[in-house]
Image (cartoon, rainbow over all chains, first blue to last red; front, side):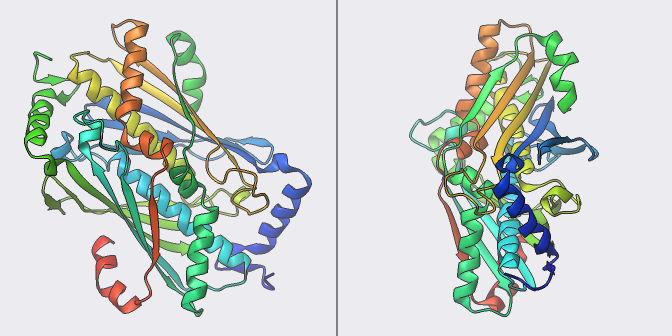
Length: 199
Length: 199
């Protein structure tokens, strides 16, 4: 257990209080995260993040933030945003980094810097429907972490393992996560209701 | 096959040319997408997207774009960016939308609008290491598509199925994708080499 309240900018005292609160009331731990998306034209679309549910209540306090996505010209786009598979790497990078820092902080390990790089292979024959033999998604993603901290390499290896074990995005990608896709047939209901709420 | 060259802003003539080119030389289809990440403080970090490899060459022509990530206060952050699991939904939304529009366009189906919303459940007991029974990643992600096009509901259902079949992010998440995480022990090599290249 750490002696300082704040380690690496993480309030570990609040972290341990949260853990205690969840142990006595597990419903606090249940979160729902949301996004909406609107197609613009061609390979271009825009996603928006606004509200979420967690710690027993809705949180609508944040301003909406939008993210433009597009493909480069070689993939028939116009570079009006980075592409969705690149956003997946962004998500993975943020989640592993945050998990690494949070779990190191909980153990009282002070960190000076964490940098990482990501590369994933995609064979477009899957996306294009040319081959059923080829994986449609990333075939493999390789990640390289560089940690600056006054600890041994073994301890750094342990930090990287803790990040993998506890990162929600890493585990969403490496396990088979159920994704249920539905078509909303009643447009009038959608336009006046839940879709606008999320947008 | 479509008669017009551009449908829904997608150059379907170029799309079919690309498919023909890949059929004769499959190496063209092999892409490598990349990101880098730098921890800032606490739950805050910044990812950067720059270069990629595809169609037999490196593409370093795009300017670097950075994405800030942070957690809301209830998750010990300061809202200085949306969080990594939200970015995952952004990625999923962009990929399904682009896949839907591309495959509908290739079939000559004109689309007026596509909107979709996303919600995923995360139980923080996984991230916090409180329970080994709970999934660390998203337990389930639900998606609702609203398609505005002069086609039957059956055809819209078919479009949604085509999107799922061909979307790289959807298939990365729903299949178990190998993610190899490495610790770089030689900092001097990292700092002068590949890490900076990606940053």
